[in-house]
Amino acid sequence: MTTSRAPETSAPPRARRGAVLGASTIAALGGLLFGYDTGVISAALLYIAPEFSLSDGMQQFVVASLLLGAIVGSIGAGPVVDRIGRKVTLIALSAVFSAGALLSALAPDTTILVVARVLLGLAIGGSSLVVPTYIAEIAPPTLRGRLVSMNQLMITIGIFASYLVGYAFAESGGWRWMVGLAVVPSLVMLAGLFTLAESPRWLLSRGRTEDARKALLRTHSAADADASLAEMSEAMREESKFSYRDLLSPKLRPAVLLGFAVAATNQLVGVNAVIYYAPTILKQAGLGDSAAILSSVGIGAANMIFTMIALLFIDKVGRRPLLLGGTSVVILVLFGLGALYLLPSVHGLGLLLTGGLMLYEAAFAASLGLAIWLINSEVFPTAVRGKAAGVGTVTHWGLDFLISISVLTLINALTPTGLFWIYGLLGVLGLVYLWRNLPETKNRTLEDIESSLRKGKQA
Image (tube, rainbow, N blue to C red):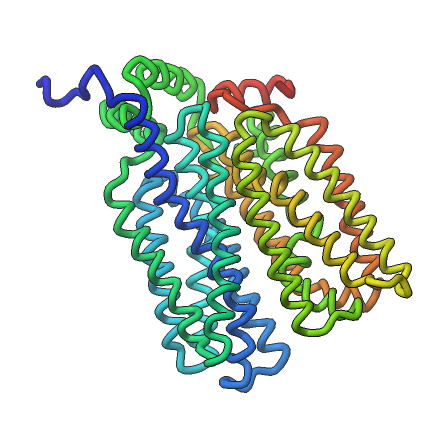
């Protein structure tokens, strides 16, 4: 029947570009919720603690419960997304986001609040895997870097928005409004997802060739859609059915190790030590409470602004220059921050530290902040992308949890100088590995990147 085939012509270029941008924006709302639900607890906890009479240990448990949920979510999302598809998984995650936000706002006690935080963590961990994977699979190669990196931009916007909402409800102490307002973007995401197509690569992997072509025609010309289908089919014919055990096979090991290295370097340079503890660090340097909080808002703004700037260049400059150059700056700043603490009598130490932390966050945002989601969405074969990308996301969340519960202990044991220098040394190890093993993925198909990794090529 003629109605069973997609039309031989597709929408004009402007319409195709608008379609892929719209679909990517809806999916990337998962990143905004990721950032908002991660950041809002810093303000809300000031009012939750007295209402529920939380000890210091329980406060830490309330915060960390989200990260524990994220670890489980990132592990579980891998096989789920390969089995039921990217779109359906995103719909389920947006529903969990909504339920977690509402339950948090209505929590009558600590137990229910922790359950709600674990639910939010499950959704955050799952979305951190599925959102960049889905966007990478619907985007043309020339736009893929910018669109996948939209997820990281949305995360930074979500964090910044949570600071602003926290400030807006600070006078009234309305922590329930702070955490509950996350339901608004989660419902928008849920509604928008029903208008999107499934990932063409996943459809093709399930034998639904015509559906895959129709999905491609939303964002590709007819000729490009046919070429993409042929290339994907060729790659899939060469791939066997993989299990998690196969991730360590010689064919997949380079991509898995690279995904692990990017995720580990992202965390081991201490970004969440800065995000979670910047006010504490600045207070120890002599700033007052208000000045320390204001400075941390500035650090968050630097994160968001430089993510936006990097998005403008990621598909022009390429992944390697931004990632390697930005990581080098991060390392230099870490050693510089550690050195500043050896000179506590310097006038304006607090301001120097604030400037250094803003430079650190800017360099991180333009490199490792984008790379963890982008690289993990680009380097794995289609048939195992869900499982393999989970290695990177589990590494991210596991190290995030460990860092979040160790920063103050390390400061007390090693001094701030020791803490920053340890992060700097770990960054050097990551930089060396990435310099030797990271291929340039700009304007290349996912199948071409896979072949390059197996051959050990950097370009």
